[in-house]
Amino acid sequence: MKKRSSENKNEQNKKHKSTKGEQVTIFDLPLEALVEISQHFSSKDVVNVCLVSKSLLNLFSLSIRSFVIRDVIDDKGIKFISDHFNNLTQLMIPSNSKITDESFKYISKLTKLVELDLTDCEEITDVAIEHIQNLKGLKWLSISECDSLTGKSFTLIANSFKQLEYLNISECQNFETEELDHLEKTLSSTEVNY
Image (cartoon, rainbow, N blue to C red; front, side, top):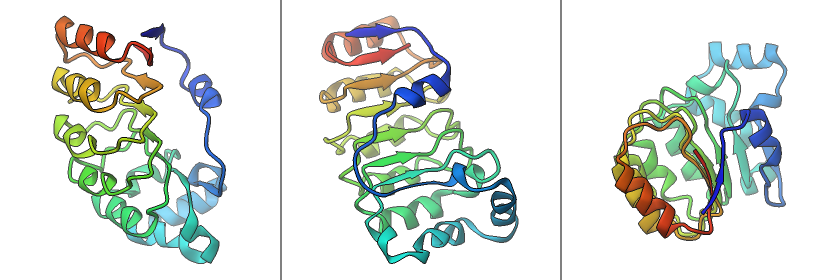
């Protein structure tokens, strides 16, 4: 297993490789637009904004990184995303306190996902990882700072995601040494950020 010490999150994101296709990053919207969206729309409506262009029906990458907008997307918003954007290969939803394990029932339907960022999604538990273990194409996963995840998630990841190329588990603390050892042994060719 390739080991890497914790890096600045911006540096990690710069190194992050995405696949070809159309991409929308809500973070790229002007601050005024983000404030307007967060004050006047439900999570379903925020995602509906993305449907303005028919070409977005083939959206492959969705990144929800803005401090203003990220907590507007909840379980219902994730359901809407999974129902309407089934071609997604990249879903980035870091630091979201509104999505729960229920969201991962819907994320599990995004079978083309290659990259998934769940950094600091404080409401998810081991159940979330159980829901997504069918995502056999997943190559990049960040569960950094997900304080409710335990070693059970490490075991599920080790047994279900042997194809992972990158795994970020930095600042995860609820695990035993044996569970980390199993992860290291099973995912020996995976780059892991502790």
